[in-house]
Length: 317
Image 1: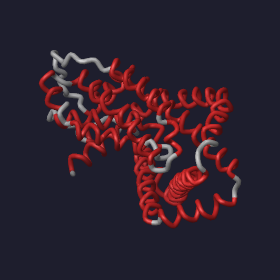
Image 2: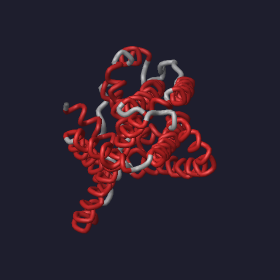
Image 3: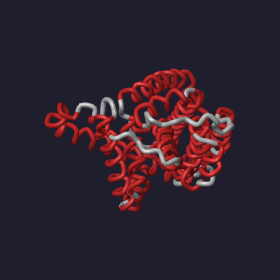
Image 4: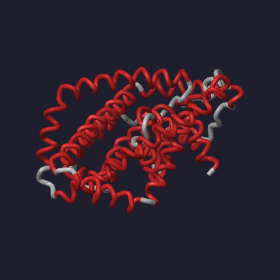
């Protein structure tokens, strides 16, 4: 458990370092603007298709799916409001002293509130779902509920492709990103001259293509509650699990180390699924592909027996 916490802690710490965060923001913000522009152009056409598809679904299914989407929006709103309320209280007292620790505070607090509100809603899932589905949504006509579900489906499609674009950019510039972290965390690491001869970019492109194809094929299933969440988790995990591992090993592993590590499939899939869960957390989801890469990187360094630099010796800590 201590080793897992150490990997998680170092990944958060690296993500919020300015040297690393700057690269994340330089990639993430332009991608947000690009996909907002694409959404502006194709929104109406996709909305018409989504609404047509939903019109073929029984109202009971649309109602159940609508209830789940409303609960998800309430959960996201509760996370953001709780974070804002706590920040307003502790901000004047601590932020002047926290300096860069503010970013670590934000990540940890958002994740903590996401887990807390998710747990509370799961405990009261039956009552909440019943009240929304049987009282709130039945007051609305089918067309209104269907159009609302179509709008949320549109957001999901554009958001998924935003995550995909970040993943592809990271795959192209993985070495630059990881070398920035490596110079900070593992400055004494001796990179083996005979690194494993594997390719990761073709794997990343293959998984990206499969992600698009499976998203299109499974699109009707996104209207079914619970099933839609499981599909999303699987698709995102599929995207992360192999390319991140192979791309990191290509840079820092020998052939023997790669053969040993690739048999840890349960760990690799677990990291991918955990990162996929973070795609649902507001604000944090902007950085998820980078965070997933950092977790894989630190896990591989740990398995190689490479100790990270102490916090007191890290520049800018």
